[in-house]
Image (cartoon, rainbow, N blue to C red; front, side, top):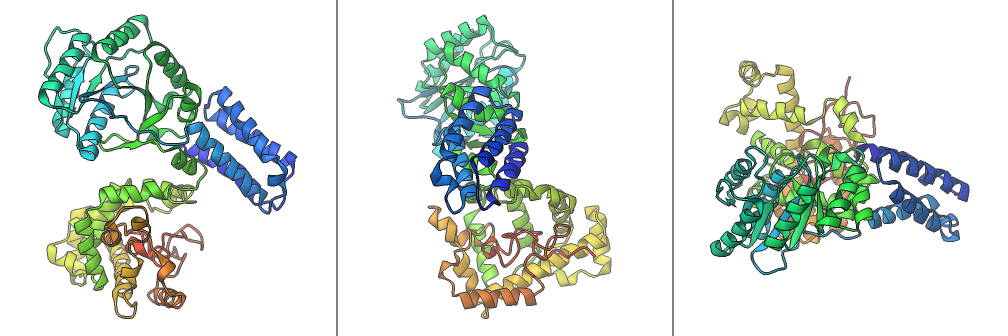
Length: 528
């Protein structure tokens, strides 16, 4: 998400932060580049102009230019203005109304209204424990009503039975009535779209609105349409009166023009963003977190939330207990890889780690991507139960069988086993007596601080909560680092092709709360 814009702004602002003193001319030159970067990202001209003017006003003041680190002050100002442009605070779907709450979905054909309706229904059912009814009002597109019915079957959500020949306004009235009788909390009306805005479409939207009296009217727009999405939002708002926006295909949007312009031009909040094809891949829009990601500051809060959602607390607690005893077999490794994939894979996690977004390409070129982890899972799946529990059984003949079963070769199996050995050594070291129960101390810091409660200890086996190092004795930490080096896990030596600096924060001893780092990362051998 926003990779192109991120790279451009990152290089511009890094040029400022690395300087000891800044003049007004330096700030002006940097802002010219920022302006160009935003225009190339397809942000509306009026938005770019307003943004650069506000940043300039604040950045050329004496308080900034004469501060100890003027470059960092400018970055902070850019960040704050980005947040302001995106909408300050995140706004969710409003359900504060008498049941059934009617949510009307509007937008052009192909923007993703039907799929988004299913995603919202699933989200409200799973997270808010609401009983939802979905109704398709699209009588024009072939099989549109059947598509929504199928989504209902897939997600286990009620859909309004189809009666042939009914008009969209009649279907809307019937849906509201059916929801009242069926005791539903929310009704989602999936309206018809067109390939372009036309008068019949707008008249139909207005009639549906008059009949169903929706509490929320959400405009679904494709993020990849850029500035045109802004004109679309303006037109719909003038005629129907939208209450919020949902941007789809955000995962493929490298520029961010629509997202950065929408809120500033229309004044309507972006409430949700689609970040993938799966029904679970719908996120709330948090302006501050998005601004952090655009400026390469990462998004640790969302990372922890994702971990909390995707990790089975009981399973993780059991794994943490095993690790505390120094046990870590190939089943545990497979579980960790699976958990990482649920959280968006290597690319998704790296995008949320501060300062790591630019590493994704380097890691891919080093062969360290999600394909590697899929291969590793295939290898582990081709083993017997006894082999997974005791990797020492794996002699040449067994490796030959596993290689044939997983479509790999003996070298890849050996690499996996070596990585597992290094991770197992780390677990023993952290869980054993010498470590003084340090594993337990390190679990749960950030997770508990962020109100994720009991996940602190429970998450330790998987995405462990982040380490809370404040309570640890510095001497203990030093001893841990020495033990890690003795086990062959030197900080920064783990990732081939990434230089000697490695990946700070992803190696074993640097993020111990993550169960020895992300699977596949710690202790990968250097290229010879």
